[in-house]
Image (cartoon, rainbow, N blue to C red; front, top):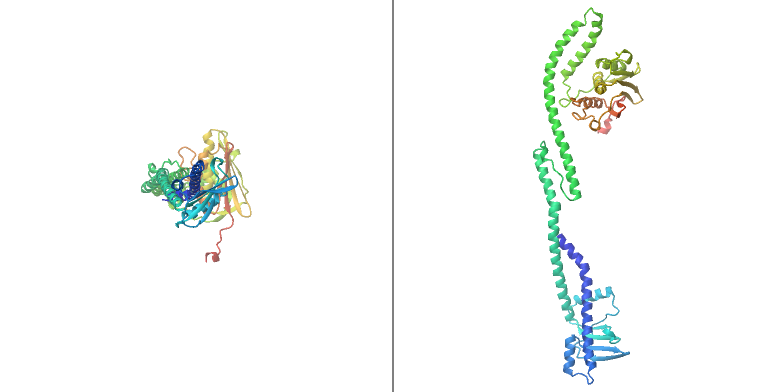
Length: 463
């Protein structure tokens, strides 16, 4: 319907000039016929009979004909005029707008009028020719022409509407219906990758919409699968944590006995062993598993950072470069002031730094070449920062895209990618952030930012 309406509106712009041109051609034809009748009269030396004159005027469709030749105006053919002349139309002086105006005036004038038409004779038959004629035949011919033109336009509009409807059905409606069906199918089984839409629309905008929908569906399907894996992992870790806690409790009892050993080497190693087992027991009791239970809020205390970093280095089996045996691959270097103390959860920060150092050590060991892990720290007026860098091979592009996402940022074969995800969550719990400064063939460097000032909310803003 819209197509028909729009085409008819467009036809109006064509209809009016076309109707004006039809009226002008009609009047010019009347002038030519009148000129032929005049030539018949002039060709006869004695003139024509009144009967023949009436027949000539009837065939031309006029009441009388005036011809001007050699500056002489002559009434050549004449008959009684039923009423006074209503209007004069000089076709020699009429422009497009005058023709349109006169055509509309004739079309909507239903009265029986007599009009005078002036034009130029053909074949240089004189200076001008003037006829007097009834307006009603002209109006009827114009109405018939307008009716035919409207019918033809309506037919074209209908054909165009059908073609446009079929094209819209194929190019727009069917693809949209296909998208809707895919969305319904995907809503019923979002875990099924077969329900993800395959873009096939020919219209560029619809194809972009299908591509965006396919991307969103793949991301959502991946997120749902990851959520399911996290839920399963949480249940498994909860069970393992229960049994592992019992095993570690028994080991802790034996470690307490070792602590009283007379052997000085054993006596020095026993506290470290006890601390490691105690830390493992606390971890199991809290069931701190990523994806199952939320991490506990940090218990903020002030402690020297250098001591904590040394514990992590010893726990990972690393020492300073001077103390390493010649065959060792990984060397650790620290640049932390002894008096640098920060306020954080000691156990959680231990886990964060341990994850970063362990990842760096494993990356270097995987190359089979010697490398160095550097740990430095400092502070500004607003935060503490801890930098952990290595001389390893760098992270692959795929790992950098999902660096802090669980199960997606793993680099080592067999790794889960949970270490950095857990570290990022723990640092965010302190109100800080962990970022990757760079990772290339020369090594990888992470930076931990911990704010010094706690977030304070104004009660008036809450109100």
